[in-house]
View 1 (cartoon, one colour):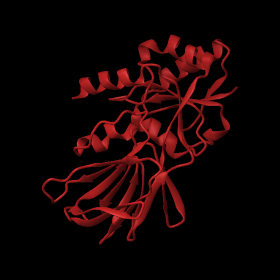
View 2: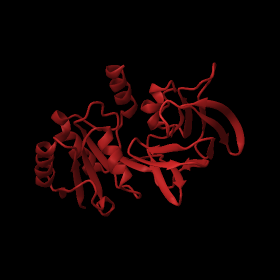
View 3: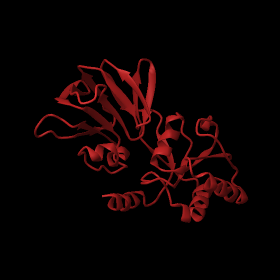
View 4: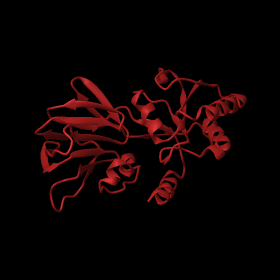
Length: 252
């Protein structure tokens, strides 16, 4: 097996230390640039925060399993902190237990965007409202004026969606979350639907479609968002829900 080690700026020293440690324990891994062909590796070790992981996932479709050491500010998607990585990473690579989490897919002008956290559909003109019609499997469920709309995964429910008033969803629940951004409507409620539904958004002006805060495309027509056939794959954390709760308590 051959692994790739990618790191965020400022984490090079730790990346070199992790590389030396992993290789000395019989697991071959090399430090590579984040924009290299990561799909050809058997696993990826990410040294950074959630943003670095999301950048990696933007560059891969068939996702090798990811192990992440947190050097970011939050690290909800990471497996451990720098001071504790040795035992954790060896245990993960030895057992190679992997879990999958849904990603969302949106095809815009023939290009497919993928998102682990969410798609943010935001008005392209600052301080302007956009009229949004929301359909779930061709059933109209909402119509409102807002700054935009988020279509999120359960993993993403603790990200942008949480700050806009959405609920926290168990990361293992098969669902899609729909939350408006700054809605101009009293009594709005987020929607949670089954993950095999198709969410269609219609809008009356140009929007930016932003995938995980990383890549974005300006668009003027309706879009459909659905469950991707290419999930994100991570080394299993037996206490992922507990770790998420502890992280959230520190933040909020």
